[in-house]
Image (cartoon, rainbow, N blue to C red; front, side, top):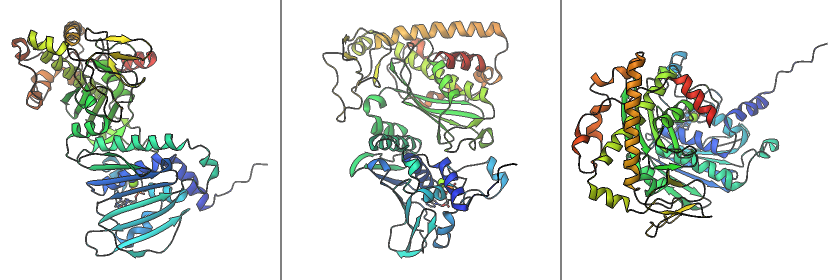
Length: 481
Ligand code: ADP
Ligand code: MG
């Protein structure tokens, strides 16, 4: 005889569904920040206590929620962002599933304060374990504050899987950083156990946000990327070739404004640095890939961290050519340094590395010597650490090193170009580039002023070599690492 089949009770089903969305405090913070962004806020404050396990409070100055909609917002599949099936292929907001508030309210004690611009009086609403109270009047500023307390208070089995407060708090901080980077026009403030941890200026300039979040050392060692392979556009920053990190923690990819993990993007970026970085060293990036929404499926991961591309090859090609051409342009500009400038640059102190995660020169250089046992590179005039000690560098790297690398790059580009001519089957998007005005070569106006132009550097550069074919590269690459 078969087992009896039970239809689960509503609240059990809610708890199961909540498990998909809410894994830990940082998942709650991610969802609530996304809601604040979707609500049009330009200032968002995230406050946590005890790693977010005890308390999460997110305040925004967005459009708020009308009182009549408040209880509905906490029901599963309740959303103001899409209305029908067709909308699923044109998602322009960060949220769309109508699940987050329901999931959070199923596993936390939640309090909401909200006021819309057309209302004098705000609303307070409490919901615990999925059971809501009455809407009450409340005096509050325009926008929304959501407080989520005691995550998993009603599911002790899940509570056990939470890590230490400090680990959970770090995960929250990372979410705030990633989101702040994708929205430099929004001022983000993060308070951890009463201490102000970060406050982005909200100027709309990505570099200002990078500087605030990772320090000058990182912000001053970036190359701008601005590249189009219609219908794709890739923009943002990648690290200068002479800088590298021993892990990928500074690699940030965004697809249509959404932070994502993308192996394709990662492989394409690192392929762009081929021959300029030592094995085991990784570039940093803050790269924004934009494409028509029908070319990307964001509905494939419970936390929307992964996406599926309709044309993986094209995305690879766009990121690769964007990174490669930015590196080539940069090496041209550096090669244009006068001998005196090159000497001065070469005499600058070397970047230092903090612990294993920091930056270090990608290859031995003339400007400093390794100090055994510390894992850091030493220079008598080394720049001091930033006050919080996160990244102990504050200077640009040695140009001599770069000049050597730029020669390697040019030789490699030359070789790849001649190989690709012989190969004949040049990918369409890449082969079209030279004739398209919006391609790599029109990006000059967007470039920041570099060193005194060298004659050779002012000549228009031939297109970057076409990327290797995706499947081979990704397979080889991912197999290796
Ligand atoms: P989704 O974001 O997928 O629509 P949520 O469960 O996160 O689903 O939110 C449900 C609805 O509640 C949203 O569609 C939105 O209308 C409203 N909402 C949630 N948070 C906010 C906020 N901070 N400001 C304004 N409206 C919000
Ligand atoms: Mg949402």
